[in-house]
Every structure is written in structure tokens, then in C-alpha cells.
Image (cartoon, rainbow, N blue to C red; front, side, top):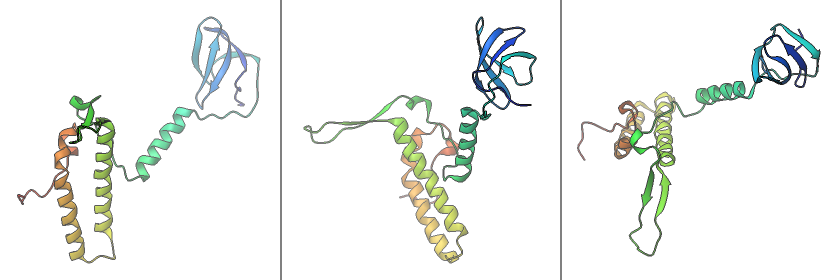
Length: 177
């Protein structure tokens, strides 16, 4: 079955006359004279008044966006979406210089939080690369892992920004420094 292209004119038993304005693999988006824009399944019982039979790209922008998002999640170093604690949403971080002649710097907390999450995710990737390395001895892996654990400990200050405790930084629980 050859798909109708954008601009094809049709008549539908429920909606009346209309023009195809978008096509996906499953649906036509049709602007009907009487009822506005409706989606109808391809293969629905319609009368074709005038068919436009150009090449039709049957993948929608939404489909492309979903596929791209899945690919980026699978292959990037960002492993999960991490929610910001509700109390900080819409808030700003204000950096007030000690010099009264200088202006404060204001940063959206969400942008700052995103940077913190990126640091956390990249540390996790570094951990995985260290642990799977064939070039490092077991002792070198342990030494590097201890540095990473200390880095996590230094970042626990930012745990207040995380909505879920499971997303927070965990340092070396045994040492008190």
C-alpha cells in the first residue's frame, strides 16, 4: 500500500473533508474543515479525493527523539536521570564575594546540580575503567579506588541537593577526617 503524502485531500465518514498534514508509520494527521486536527490510523476507511504520492518519511520527530535518547543513554557516560530535591527546584545559588565592590554571581541550582551529577557519573565511569583495566596491577587498582572513594567523600556536602538518598555520594565510612 502506497502511503498518502502531505497535502493529500481525503474524506472521512466521521470527520468530513480534510488535508493530510503529517504522516507517521501508523497514523495520518489530518486537518479537517469541521473538526480541526485529528489523527487517524493508516488503513482506516477513507475516500481519497486527491492523492499526493511523494516519498513519505514515516518516522516522526518524536520517534527520532526517543531513539536518539535511548542511544545516548546506552552509549554515553551518563547512566541515569537524577532528580533534584523538590525544595531546590527553581532556586538559585548565590555566590557572594568577600569584596563588597564586586557583584554576586547567581546560578540556577538545577544547572549547578547537573554539573555535580556529571562529576559523579564520570567518577563512576573512571572506576569501571580502572577496575576493568588489564594494564594496572591489583595494588594499583586498589590505590586508585581509594582516591576515588576520598573524592566521593569530599563531594558528600552536595548530598543535600539529591532527591533520592540512593543517588547520593558515599565516601569512606570507616575513616573520620
